[in-house]
Length: 293
Image 1 (cartoon, rainbow, N blue to C red):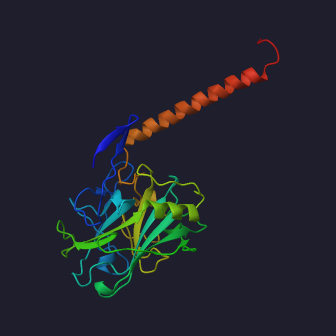
Image 2: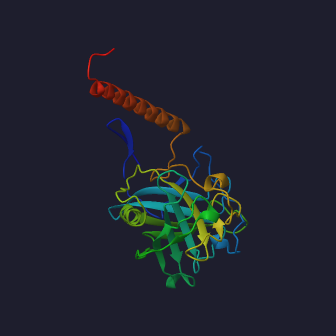
Image 3: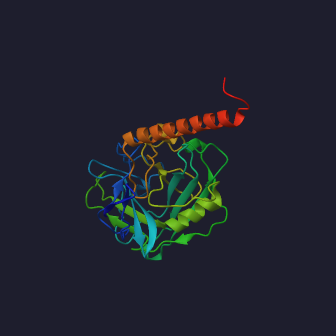
């Protein structure tokens, strides 16, 4: 993936990518760039294929972006505790991504990947979008969601869905599962505009979003594993307090250096000061009816 300068701003080239890629994935990090990790055996209902895990040198969650079939996509990859073999690969449950679009710590959208159970050859896998409820949506105990009207999007094996045995880790003594899926920018953009106040939202490779990830036995609950923390699926703490939310990542999953936040804040403050001075100046000119004292 090439890095180019456009108008003095760094911009990643949009490469062709695949859910089956073994390279190019960026591990999820917090705002301070520390790696997000998840302990093993903290999933609440016992299924290893729904238990996020990580280990040294084997991150638990990854992200990337690029084109699939000529269209821009976001790609997510999670490491689960148990790979059940070629006849049962997958997690046979619900794998959710929560998105905070404006950085206020509250979820604005839920992306749910649901997979039917049974033999792999008979499974269906779909993406649906959930609209958060009327609560604060800032942590497990204050978050709810529903699926108003949007039709589910089918995932296609080896194109927008993949599940393989990990070759780099056996966190709890069993082979790990790497499960990946992709969602198009267009699908995300339409969902945001349909279910939230962001009616003019436009998804680009530079769009910054903060994320959480979880698994559940039902599509409208968080009752198995919350990535980045031990248990805590019913906690009253916020996502940030639990260490379960990423920093503001671009589509590739890259969070800016902490110094960048300081620079952005300084630029915002400088712009605010300039605007204030301009308003004062204009007010002084417009409001005068005689010579200055």
